[in-house]
Image 1: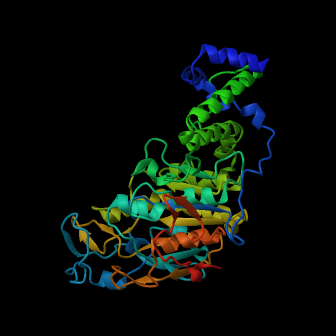
Image 2 (image 1 turned 120 degrees about the horizontal axis):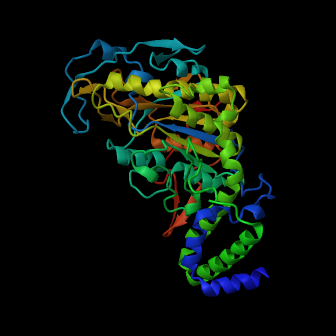
Image 3 (image 1 turned 90 degrees about the vertical axis):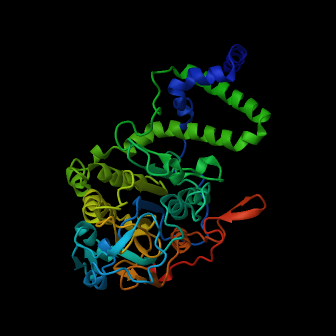
Length: 469
């Protein structure tokens, strides 16, 4: 009966008509046929060797945090505060006139049993010092936000390539059938700088791009049907939709990847109707846990909710979670001290809450947490009290997931200008992240236009062995 009804409907309506009429509750069409599926068999793939981490949470700090104010204390810079800029500072980006050396107004003090020194504006993160490995010798290839963002996310300073989250999704598949492999948590009201390119699948099939989850209100817009639809009607619609998609695919073979990705996304949306809301419901957490992240407290509520949701997502099998700050808050071209303190007030407690919560639940060993921006800030002043973009040397940190904490790796020079010891490229960082997930960066490839593309691409990247536990 369903087949004849579908055929009759197909004669009466065009494909566009059907899609339009179904739009209100389209993502629910496949729901009943998907409820009974196993949640553990979602296309997960074999790693190259035993992984140390099952999931990654990337805490991306748009704008570029100041390493010399947070993680890389420079006593010599402070001593020479307000002195003339040295002559070897020759490759500063010429956004505007640069002034004299600018020391940090913040005090540093030893933290944890390791004694590593952290800035006073990171008191909560400092409590986790024994679990964190700080890389003080990062460098990248461009001083502009966009190009530096592209490199930090995709490995190159050109646009259009897949992000690391997309590569992980492509290489490992999904562990959960009911949630995406790659999830993005950003401010619900606005896109971060460079928008959706931060989580793009680039030339990989579209199914590997990041899926944005809201941290307030409805987790995914348009996920829930607008009204109750009888199962018999849903079944007929599914049959018709399957028939129309098959016909469309036959006529447009060049669109196969896009169409298959779209179908897969609708099926995933149906499964998420039962799972996404629960995964993002922080109200299920105890008041103590919510307070640990700074939920329901200014100014930590928004970022704290996203960090807590990230923990709930990796618990449920999501492989890669990216959390973005609002806008470009670390871009402190003026009033650096004030801006840096404000950024830390928003993010420090939630980040530490995440690390502490993962650890007490036994999840930190299997979850790699990565913190950092697209570059650092200059050790000289801009606009009197600001810092400019700085690619020559900056800091990021990693924790959990096979990382040996309580250490600093590499170093910048005495003024925090150049990375001089154990210089670490973005490709090295990417190779290390993939390694901890059980992947060899040299063999995670995608054949395109006659060559095998990879995340680390043209670079002779190395795994940073001293970081590994």
